[in-house]
Image 1 (tube, rainbow, N blue to C red):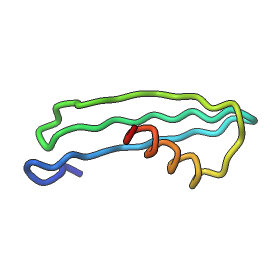
Image 2: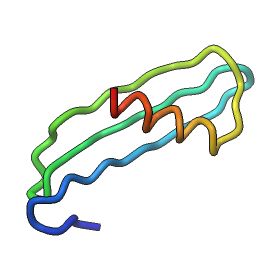
Image 3: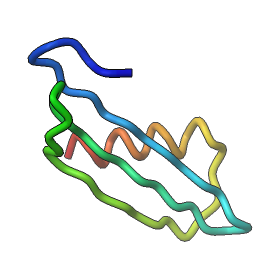
Image 4: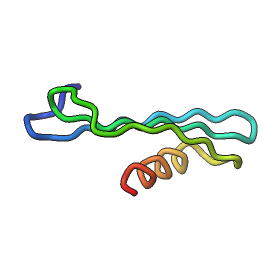
Length: 61
């Protein structure tokens, strides 16, 4: 979904494999311009809700 004018949209995706978690995050303006993106891996298992919360925390920092 395209965000409203002057808004920033943050997408978070997570995947859980055995004891490793992968997180992808991207932030972009309403026109699609990418502000920031990153991918991180965590070496401990979490529930999906906690993984997405951790991803948002990483994006804010």
